[in-house]
Amino acid sequence: MDKMDINQLISDATKEWTALMNGDTPAIFVGNATCARSAGSMDVIDAFKNKLEKENLNCNVIEVGCIGMCYLEPIVIVYKPDTPLACYAKIGVNEAAELVQSHIINNTINKDKLIGIMGNEMQSDFTVFSETEVMKPQKRLVLQNCGIIDPNNLNHYIANKGYSGVQKIIQIKPEEVIEEIKKSGLRGRGGAGFPTWRKWTFCREAKGDKKYLICNADEGDPGAFMNRSLLEGDPHSLIEGMIIAAYAIGATNGYIYCRAEYPLALIRLRIAIKQAEEKNLLGDHILGSKFSFHIKIKEGAGAFVCGEETALIASIEGSRGMPRPRPPFPAISGLWQKPTIINNVETLASVARIMQNNAEWFGKYGIENSKGTKTFALVGKVKNTGLIEVPLGISLREIIFNIGGGVPNNKKFKAVQTGGPSGGCIPAELLDISMDYDSLSKAGSIMGSGGLVVMDEDTCMVDVARYFLDFAQKESCGECIPCRMGTKQMLDILEDITSGKGNIEDIELLESLGEGIKKGSLCGLGQTAPNPVLTTLRYFRNEYEDHIIHKKCTAKVCRELKYYDILDDKCTGCHICFKACPVNAITGNPKEIHVIDQKLCIKCGMCFEKCPVKFAAIECNAGNKEGI
Figure 1 (cartoon, helix red, strand yellow):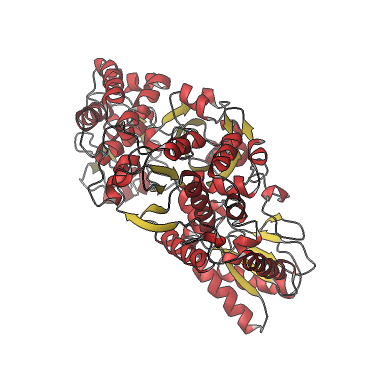
Figure 2 (figure 1 turned 45 degrees about the horizontal axis):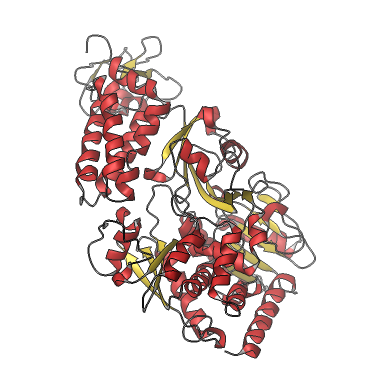
């Protein structure tokens, strides 16, 4: 494609986008990523189309990605000429038909479902929302197209600066691209935050007749969905970032390693790759230049360890995904022993945004040693769950209480797990911590790919540590002894503690084992697996002591360290708990006070769940009942 052709492509894309957003035809944008689909968006789309057909209305129905507010899905944005763009939440099948009637036909905004007015034209900067606190502290750089453009429409991406970064880089030297990334301050968004430009330089300067670029889209952290959402909502941003990175390091072939559990992301990636190839934005002699780059998709089977660079490389090569010793690092000897760069989805999408604009534009967000923005999956005990993007350096308090809306049911905030199983638990006393790479490291945690799991007062921190260690132990490839045996021994100790069989010496043993595993493990999985245990010991030692010394789980989570009792003054003898008990541990005649035989009780909680709320005759207590 020559220069005239690319200009024509931009012109056509701009005309299509302008006609959609400022034309005479109304448009309805429906969130249709995985989160929205789970909330029924596919049926909502059908409902819109059926109503429009019934009313014989000319209206575009556009499927878009996740806007981030997953707790409000399905989300719908309605455009009507000469009226403000309106964003609606929790639109079901019935509401879809009503929305067509009220907004499209009657020009009336439905205030019951309204969450934001976006001005008179679609804008990627969602700080224009006037009625929601969720978006105001955010700054959408990487996610600027998600929830706005049709991810299956190349013209939508091009009309919003898409592939302008590729146009720019093929006119300058690869070293100039690396220098621009260096000036931006971009650090890797998938782990410990290694400077992107430095990693690229190692590979650029490495000797080799062939070099490779790999996108790590194997997002395996429990509660994390940042990469998935970006791939589903704006796949071309990744492809553009990969083209730019490949040009910078001298690679001609690339792989996207994405887990098979992301079917929608894979579908949209394949569509985007085909579209880019058809328009000569990807493939041989990109945009008429001497530079060629090809992308293949490799589906992973869901092994957490394959998020580690060398294990991922082994998987692509067709071997079992197991790490290898480093050095040599992949930048020197990686895929098929050739120099290889592995970046994650968000890093490469950030590269696209930087080159579409410039380093100064990106670097004005964040703080000195952590430039730009970061996406987080905000989940757990928080009101506004979903995907957010904020400037690095924002406080944890602002994320949880301003954006997240705080903890539901007036419960107290207790801790947040950052960085997934490889991260650590940050306690309430550190709520004002700066969310940047260095501050989190000092607190004993990591940024990781961006998972934030919020916990309230009803959370047992010993059980949390056990849960994450159990995950890491099961996902260990078993290659090295510190990880294989060490995590198993730590898990055995934690299970003893949570079942009331722990000894006070176990605390010191856990700390010693944790430090040994971190120092002796072969790869990042083992080196970070003890983090949840070590940080909970650091900040919540009293809970370990309660479990061990007092045989009590204050949060009433650990099954062996709690018991159920029937309150004499509230029991009416309704017999419901009697019928619910699976082991016949409850005795009592109808309309008489019932009793639980603690020796027979298996602490399943069925009686507690089934007891009518109006009676509240059964209570759950921390500790062991005297005499049991």
